[in-house]
Length: 81
Length: 160
Image 1 (cartoon, rainbow over the protein chains, first blue to last red):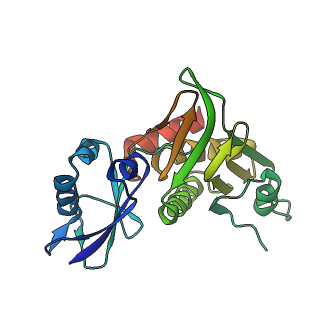
Image 2 (tube, rainbow over the protein chains, first blue to last red; image 1 turned 30 degrees about the horizontal axis):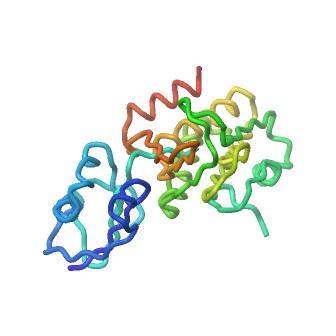
């Protein structure tokens, strides 16, 4: 199945793109999407301890299931305000 | 066009416009408080040139709405508006405006303070700081709206 991955701030800089289309074998969780991404881009791996994740523009968890067509976002620690 | 109570926008912020949107003409309110966050020239010993704010916009709006709901649960008489700006901001420009109205001043102050503390904890917005000699992405809190410890911390600060 195919998911859209959104990356922000320094994660986007490290990946060189803020939006990637990824094919992952289903069924999959957000964690599996992340693992496949880090396999291709090891520099992202340091963020695993501090980032949070979103699924279809809502707060989510690494163990959430993803469906074909979903948008998965990886969020570095936030600094708004 | 009416001003939304919650917004993430590239346009300059207006405290007056948000205050008017929050205001209640019925006379029920006894207090209005506001907070305006500005781009500051000094940060951690660096001379800031300007900031670029980035957001995951749909989730940022959702996060702000969630915070407003939390504040209303804590202080039921409070009404809130919060606008966050993104894009390039120069020194002295407003990055966030919060307005809280309530029957009594204590609730208005608390709701306003709670909102800015929670924005810094959970809203997916990032500062890209451009300073003399380089640039850096600022990273604060891991955004987890269900982190009860963080929520309690914001509540304690708001009631201090």
